[in-house]
Length: 351
Ligand SMILES: [Zn+2]
Image (cartoon, rainbow, N blue to C red):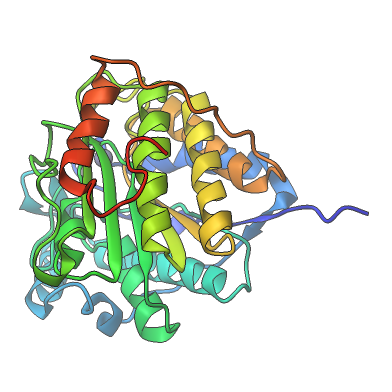
């Protein structure tokens, strides 16, 4: 009898209890297509109940003043915290549940108690800075979870790959001076939030442990797969992570209303297959995906299906390495990264 592979999912109706002004793109309705994809995978999904993060877990990344500012805004909700970021009366609870659910997923996967999986949480986290909310994000779920792995599970080296279409400024700044967390971001550039150019490569002891892959508008499956193969995989191999966490937004999807990339459902499947292969080769398969953005129903549905199927499939199909055609956006991006990081990372650009 073959053992049926399962995948772990953190999903909860309470993630819908954070709600902003009418027409705000980061809305509870985003979870419907995500949930539909989860439900369609039936009993192959292992549901993990989220818990509320403890304030001390949040404070590993955020300053106390920020935590208190969110709590205070919630007491006077509805409130705006920045031009894009709001709170409603239950937002503090929901944000703590998102962070706590992410921590539990990564911790249980790290311990080998659960299969790799997806934290389908909201609000998202990767724009949240140590001292302020930003870009729909209150607390930085994935950064908080990475610190929990280091503090509680004895892990040293963690790779955070951020493929949300926006640069993960909050995550970058959380680990900018820290060589123990390699932060790699693939994003549309120039675009919101404005950071994430090639030259942002970490500071002090963390120099080299931030790797930005800024992509021009219009990139699709070939470019995303190409940078994963030519940049992310060699960088990960050189870093030797003990676990891989993915800030998985689905707003690089071609239908997304906020961005201008062209990734398809097939593209997200190929990306998931590559990331899983990387985790199996480098860290015994320890891998967790954390939902960030994604604002088209079709993108959220196809993206979630791609990630779940990529985790469930016993042998996901790996895309072939295509030749690097000259004078293409992919070539320019790859060599832009090589110029900054090529000396330290063997095989970067041409694995
Ligand atoms: Zn985004």
